[in-house]
Image (tube, rainbow, N blue to C red; front, side):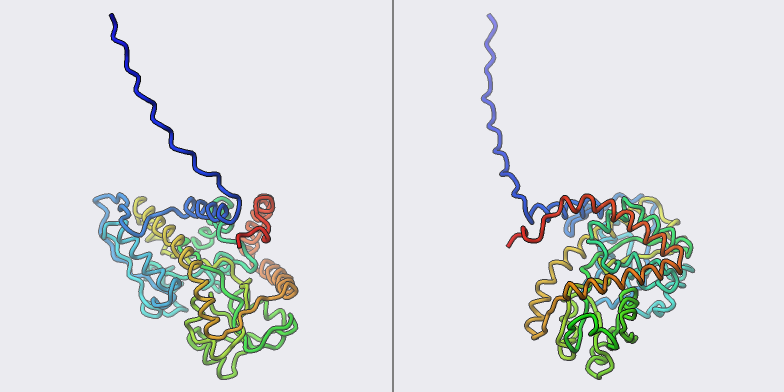
Length: 384
């Protein structure tokens, strides 16, 4: 007689998670997923090293840093990248970011990396506007996209391919390596009532933002970042851009200019790159190339998260310094947008590559907007 099989009691199923509530949390989750998908991920602690072939030689790269290393995010991002490369290569590959001017002056770095006398430079594409006019569009556009849209254009809309094609003509290979919060509009000694307030002001603004303000009647001046507080205090400037609140609050501007304006429209998002000599890049094995690009993606995600998280504290510090944080009116933003369109058209008319990159972004933006206008929540539904 066959023995009856004993049936094991079924294990209870774990309860289903509660349904997600539609709101800001969902958008933040979606943003995080999108960032991780594109930029890749490697944790800060205990991340396993990528497999690098045993025959891969140990390497020491001295790279130029266009920002002082003690400047949070902008300059320190190069050191963090070096840490990630060392960790992922099990210490076989060392990047040594050198302070500005050590390997070459700021005016010489582009040519030195192009010629291979410097292996790479940590910078923003805006630095190369003189050599490659279209490069400025990859450092953040006036009234430009949010980081997720910018990354989508680079990876899926042909932006990165255009970027690298432009640089290849100069024997350079750019790797997107940092995303930062957008700049504030800037510091002003007197309040801005309307767009007419910009006329005849002595301002220090760079790149396309400076071109827009010049079109609106401002008189542009050139000063180094270190000299800006002195120029404001010495009655040589009426206003200037710098960076974002957490960094601006550290630089002593509040003693010279009390009016601080947001939002920054002139460079969104703020993009950093590692630009490698093309010959040196091609000389790397596929494993080493993948390691460096993975480290840059990790670095970009870290800088974006750290930068965004630091801005509330930056605003609180500005308030403690009795800075009047103001918001540009809708009328002023509309006037700035109109002037921006005219400036972009002028640049596109002068430079074929500029026109090609701008056309690529706008084609992607038009297609992407069919999604965002339906998927985005209206501002009034944001979490309190």
